[in-house]
Length: 291
Image 1 (cartoon, helix red, strand yellow):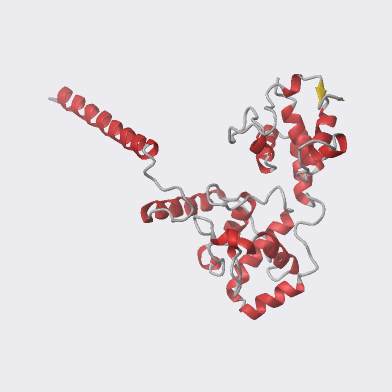
Image 2 (tube, helix red, strand yellow):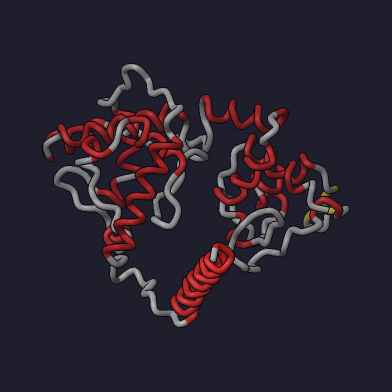
């Protein structure tokens, strides 16, 4: 009896897994799920994604120590919110831009963020982004000071009337975020250290290649991206003798090419991606390993 029961349970488990796989195959290949941005996810899918996202953010931000007294009213925080957040989330009395209103899931206002998130949560989300939502990661574009400033400003939105918000925007009208230098402050120092002697440098390099959209045009071994061939695939780049047919293939020259391609070849379709010196060195080091 015990053996029969064991066999039955195994058969039941295999059958259940088979049914799940069959259902998933029908769901995917029959194109039954609407992936358009005209309609939101179904209520169960949206609720599940929200639950998973909130739990993941809480777990991954547990070790973050927020500043004791973040300058939540700083003009810098207002400028960074205006330049990096308002187009999708709007502000008190201000609607989001067309891009934000046309996204799914809808970004929504952040006026009630303080009810749902702590400062460490907002900082983690702002720094790392949330995949498949349109929320970008700002770690490679904002200094750590700016990340904290804009996170603090987000939590203060609930205290601002439309008139107060307008005054904050007026006070910050002469500031730009990020500044003209793509990478400033402590963030650049940290990246430079990673590029030289951190054991995790390769992972950081792969992230940088994605954050600067290199994977949007090139197929790069070790990274995940669309199968596009706008630019040539970079497999074997480290074994090539020359770059763009003229430069010796050294990490220094490769970093120069990544940072300012038109200075080397004015006719190139490779755009200027505003890559910092430290990030370019990090990416060049990784690309040199592709042999």
